[in-house]
Length: 325
Length: 211
Image 1 (spheres, rainbow over the protein chains, first blue to last red):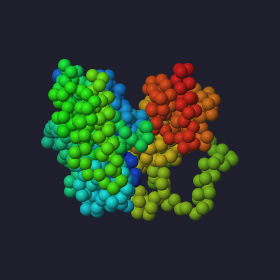
Image 2 (image 1 turned 180 degrees about the horizontal axis):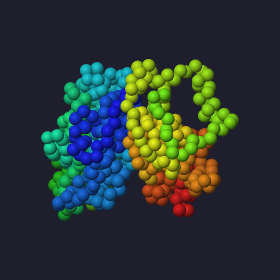
Image 3 (image 1 turned 135 degrees about the vertical axis):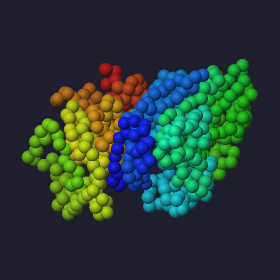
Image 4 (image 1 turned 45 degrees about the vertical axis):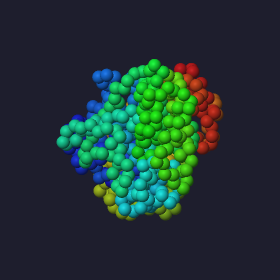
C-alpha cells in the first residue's frame, strides 16, 4: 500500500474542502482492498464517516431518501425499505457478507469498482486502471464478464446488486459539490466504458454523494431481486434481475426491470418493461417479455452461457413477483 | 521500525520464558537472514522503494479501547486494525487469512458490530470499542459460543475459528440465528477450509437457543 495522509471531516464543508485534493472514504471495503493491491493510490484519504448522512426518510408521495452513509445492513433492515421497496433490501442482503454489509455504505456501494481480475492485477493490461494499456479480459478468461454495454476498451461488469435495484426503480443520486447541490438520474450516474473506461461515474472532482432517492411509484407495488451465482452465498452475480410491478385490475400498469452481472453498468431493460405494460400476467407473457432482455447482447469467448441465463433469470423473477400479485 | 510502539496505558504483558510458537517463528525468520530494514507494514515486508517512502510515511495518533483496555497508539496510516491487533498489541487471536475481506478469519466487533478487521484502517478508529476473541470470555469463563465450539467439536485446524466465533456472536446478536439455513446464509462471510460447517452451524444454533 502506498503511503497517504489522512484527515477526518467533521462537516460537509470540511469534507468538500479536503475532497478537492483527496479521496473520500466511507466504509472502505473496496478502497482499502484496492489500495493494498496498489490499484488505488490516493495521496490523501478524507474520512467522511462523521458526516450527517445516515438518515432514511420517506419523501412526499411515498418515495424514500437513503442517506449516503447508511450502511448496507442498516438500509436492508430498515422497516420502510423493507415495506416499500423489498427489491432493495433483498439485493442488499444477497450482497457480500454480513461483516462487509456492516461496514459498506449505500454511497460507497454505487461507487465500488469492478471485480474484473485483470483490473485488480496490476501486472495485467487494463484500460480502466491504466488508460491505453489494452484490455486483457477481451482475449483472456472472461467467463464472468459483461455481454451488454461493452466496448473495445472494456468488458468489465459493475459488481453491485443494489445498484441494479436502483437502476430498475429509476432512483436519483443527490450530489453536493463545491458548486452546490444537484441531482443525477441513476441511469446517467454510472457511465458505460466507451473509450474511457477509467471514467466510471458522472461526478466532478470533489463531489460528494449525499443520498440516493427512490421515487414514489404507483401502489400496490410488488418487487424482488433474484441473484444467480457460482455459490449459494457470498459471491458476485453471474446474472441477476430486479423487478417491480404495479398491477391493478388484473393488468400490469407499470413495470421496472433491470439486470445485473451482465452489463458494464446495471442494465435497465426498457424493452422488457414495454412488453409488460398494459398486459395481463401469464406464463407466456413472462417468457415473451424475458426474451427481450438479451437484445444487443455480445457474448465473449467464455460467457456465452450468460445470454440464456439472463433470459431465464428475468423470466423467473417476473413470474416470482408477478404471480403473487 | 517507523511505526511507533503502542503506548499502552496498562502494563505490557509479561514475557513467557519458554518460546511461544510466535516468538519461535519470529526468531527463525530473523535467523533465516531476512533483513527487515523498513519494517513491516500491512503485514508485508516492504520492497526497497516502498521502505524508503515508508520512512516518511504519514502516521496518526489514535486512542481506542480493545477488550476494555484503552490504548493510545501512533500508527502508520496504512495499518489495518488486524495488524494493529496482531503486530502491536500482541493480540494474535484474530487471524490473517486472505487480507482482502474474502474469508472472515479476521472478524472482530467494532462498537458491537462484526467487521473485517483486515479492511478496517486503524487510523479511523479513534474512540472506537473493539472486541476480539481474547476479550470475549469473562476471565477464565468462556463465552457460551466458545464453549459450544468445544462441545460440538466445531473445528479441525482452528485457523478460522476465532473469526467464526466472533462472527457467530454478531450473527446471534443481530437475530439471524433462527434456523440452520438462516445461520448458513448469515455466516457465509466466514470460510472454513476444513469444512466444519455442519458443526459450526450447530454450535451457533445451540448458543442462540440458550440465549
